[in-house]
Length: 191
Image 1: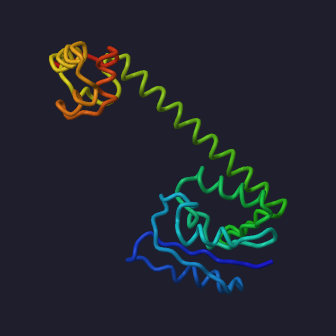
Image 2: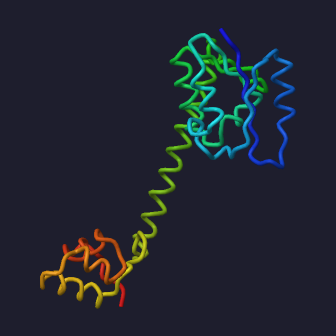
Image 3: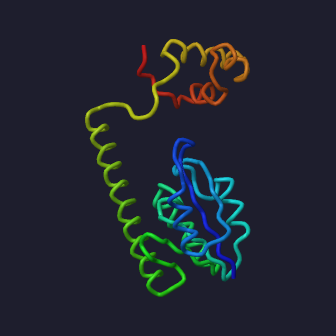
C-alpha cells in the first residue's frame, strides 16, 4: 500500500512549493509534480497519467487541494469514482476527506450530486438560449460557405457528370460540403 502525492501548477510562473510542503507534512515521500493547465483532462496529463498507471488497489493518491486534479468538475469526479472503484483512495488534504472511508464516500456522493445539478443547469440555460435564438428567426450554426449562385453552379456541374472531388477542388470546400449541396441539404440564405 503505497502513498503517492500529486502537485500541479498551471504555468511556469507559478510555484507548487505550498503543495509539496503540505504533501511532505502528511508524510508522502513520492511526489509527482506537473506544470499544465487544469483545463486539460486528468487522464491526458502526462505526469498524472503515468502516476495513475502505477497505482494499485490499496494505494493512496494524496493531493493538497481537489482543484489540483482539474478544473472540470465532471472530469475530476469521474476520476475520483474510477479510482474508488479500483480500490485506490484519494486523500484531499485541505478538506480532510479520503474517498475510501464512509465519510469520504458521502463527500464524493454530495460532490457528484452537485456536479449533476450543475450539468442540468447548463443544459437548461443552453436550451433556453437556443430557443430564444430560434424564436428571433436567426439561423443556428455556422454560416454557409457558398452563395446561392455557387450552390446552383455546383448542382449543375454534378448533373453534368463532374465528380464531387473535382467540384470541391474548384470551390475550395470539402467533398462533404459539395455532397450536401447536391443533396439539397445546404441552407440557401446567402446572396
